[in-house]
Each structure stands twice: as C-alpha cells, then as structure tokens.
Amino acid sequence: MDYAKFMKGAFNALVARGVIDDSALTDVNIPDEEFETFENKYEIKIPEEVRTYLRAYGHSFNMLAAAVPEDLYGHSDYVVDINLQINMTPEEIAELDEDDQFDLTVTWSNFIRVDKDNPLKNLGESIDGFRGYANCIENPEINEERIKKFLPIGEWMSAGALCIDTTKKKEDVDINNTDTWQIRWFDHEVFDWEDEEYIGEDGDIAGAVMFPDFESFIKLYFYGAFDNAYMAQCDDWGENPEDKSNWVR
Image (cartoon, rainbow, N blue to C red):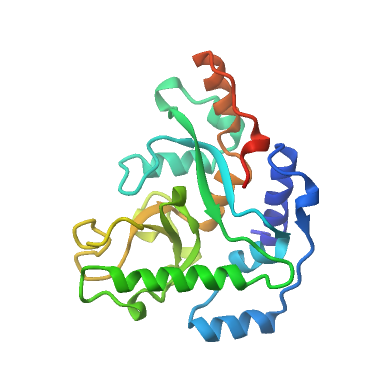
C-alpha cells in the first residue's frame, strides 16, 4: 500500500465529506531522527503506517464521529463481518442484502492530535497514560514492561486505549482470523484483565480484538465507510441525518 497517498487521502476525505475545513490542516515535519529518539525513549517501534499518518498533516482535533455498526464492540460475534464491510467500498456496503446490513449509530472516538510545533507530544502522552493504567490493574502479573508492545493510536468511544500490538506483523494479518489482528482495545473501566479475557490462555496479553489493522480504523472514521448506508438508513427510518460538520472536536 502507498501509505503516503492513503493517509493524505484520509484527511482530504474528511474535507470532502464536510467534517472539517482544509484550514484545519497544517504542514508538519517529523524527521526520521525524531522518530528514532522517540522510539528509544519509549522502547517501541512505530509502524510505518502510523509514521505516515503523523506526517500527513498537523491538526488540532482529537475526536471524530462516524456512522458505526452498533454491533462493533470488544468480544463482538460480528467483528469479522463488520470489518469485512469496512474494507468494502461505500457503494458495495449500500448494495448488501438487508439481512447482511448492520444498524448504524453515530459514534465518537479519539485520535492522536498532531501539534505542528511538537507533533509527537500527544502520542507520548498516550503511551504514558496507557502504561500508567497497568499500575491500576488487579492482576499482579501485569506491569508496564509487559504492555510495552502496545502502541496507543486512539481511544475507542473515549472509553479506553485502542492500541496496535506491534508484535503482530502487517503481512500476517488475516481478516478472517482475529488472532492475527493488530488493533486491540482496553476498556478503561476494566481492572481484572483475566476476567475480561484480555489475557489469553497462554498468559499473553491480548486485549479485545477490534480492527485487523490501523487502515481499517482510518477507513471507518476518515473515509466514512458507512456514509452511504447511514444516509439510506436515515431515509428508511424517517430520520434526519446528522450534520457531518458537527462530527469533529
């Protein structure tokens, strides 16, 4: 994938969809050396797709709303079917049989804000916050060292860190096999990770599977994967669609 084209296109899609005005975007410069210093400090590798996202544009927003299937939630039985649809075109989603379509609701989630003058500051704060969360977990075997493999890239519904498991390789992702998925969620109100099944039978920390990869999350919120289906649903239910210019904070 051409990540530069995809990530630039993601922000341009927000403009085209009427979520933001292009004045909200600024140029940003993050040299490789700055990434390397950051990675050494936090002992984590930033995947290329995340580097490209951070380099695409500076922006001050950190919350976006989008039409999201109501059944998309940690441990959902429908998570594979939903992500298969996220990776379709909006036109293909709209043409699905009614039995295969999901009820949609406008849902907010957080993204990393990229400040022009200090573009990695907010990513660092997210890492610090997530690792600090480990100190509150009831399971005594959980500590900061054991969760260093997780890179927070946002918050699902503002209810806990959405992370990339950096030990899972992009080339190994199989959308039909959630064990290979990179994006995991940790509900910030959950403090017993074993009871919530955030810890696998082998003792490995896994979190709740959410998305196969970072690109799927971007397709949902930036490209508006379910925009067409949402408009059709509003028409079918006799509801007025929400103004997308209110889908940013």
